[in-house]
Structures are given as C-alpha cells and as structure tokens.
Length: 274
Image 1 (tube, rainbow, N blue to C red):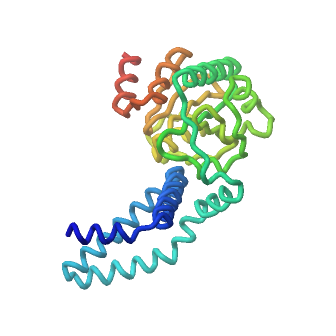
Image 2 (image 1 turned 135 degrees about the vertical axis):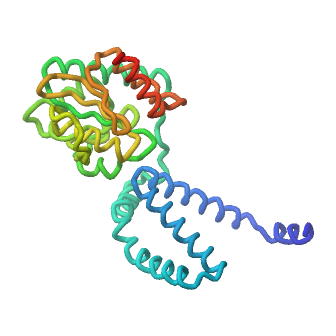
C-alpha cells in the first residue's frame, strides 16, 4: 500500500498541482455564487436524489431505481431552466471580473456605524410616517430578490436610506436590501405571506416582510405609512412598536459571530411585551 502511494505521488508534477488548485478555486467560487441564492437548496435536493438512486441500485430495488432514473432524466432537462438566474449571474460576474472578488465582512466598528445609521433613518421615516421596507441579508442569500429591484450597491447612511423612501421618487416602492453595510438594491419585490390569521391592520409591507422571513433567515425592518410604527420581522414573526434603542439592541446580535436564533427573538419579544 505504501509503495503504491509513493508511486502515485512520484507521478504528480507541478502542473498537476496547479490544475487541482485551479479546479478547487473554481468550485469554491461556484459555491459562493450558489450560496447567495435559493439554488443551494435545489442542489442539495438533487444530491439527495442522486444518492437515493445509487442506493436503490446497490440494493437491487429495480422499480424504485427505474423511477428515480426517469426522475433524474427529467431533472437534467429542467436544470437549465431552474438554474437560469444563477447561470446568467455567473456569466455576468465573469464578464465584469467579479468571479474572484472577495466578500466583505463587517468589523465591530463598522457594525456599530451601520446600526446607528439604520436606526437614525428608521426613526426619521417613522416620525414623518413614510413607509419603508429594509431587508437585512444574513446567511441565506437574497440575490434572487435583489434582481427584482434597481441595482444600487451604495454605502449605507441615514441620509441615503431616507432618500430611498421619499414618496414619489423612483426607488420608494418596494424594499431596500442590505448586504453588510451596503444597500444592494431598492424597489425590490418580496413574497407575501399566506398566513390568514394575521391582524387585519397589517398592510402589504408587513405581509411582505413576514413572507420573506418565512422563506429565509433575513430580518426585515418595517415602517408603517399609516401609523409610523416601527416593526421587525424575523422567522415569520413580527415584533411591533419599537423605539430606536430597542431596534439597535435587537439587530446588534445579527452582525456578531454569535447569531441569534428564532427562540432568542421570541424570548426577547416576550420579555418586552411583558
């Protein structure tokens, strides 16, 4: 065995190592692009389906194996349609030279600046009863929703956020999506919740905020146009009637290394309601 390993390593040249590293880098960048969309969940499902096919063949389950093989054939034909947004985004990134660009992460100072600017903007919007939807991206990528709006990619500031939602301006309709300390897009469309048990007072903005958080781990800050009430949606749950300090205290853990869980959010909500 040792001699065989030595024989294999003796045949490896510098060009082979470069080839392996290059393939690894490309696969990693593909993963990063998929991670920023719902395609990752689809890919996991495809892997499970493939594994089930191999297991059924190994166990000689002929009927199940035949069904799974036919399913894989249909899936293979449908893949270009299912992954069309990701394929287009990958080609765009390649053309713009963004494939090997490193993602930005916030340090502690940048996090505090972001929370301060965000809270200031939300308070001003609430005081003037200007409706707003601010989406904070977390681990689940929101690139699919970013593409429904107008691309911005601007640094977050309270003046910038306020201007986005000024009525009768090009960007005020829809949601603004934040990735780190940058506004990626504005005027984005979000899915509405189908929960019929919600309070009838909640309008389209609140239903869109809840709908997105039902499908992702994003956090959405909502300002009511009718009442000026500040709310936060998380995991399909809505916490209303927040002030500036409560808003910052709720959002701060989302930008630290220890992410809050839904149970943390519900405990925080119960303690504040109590």
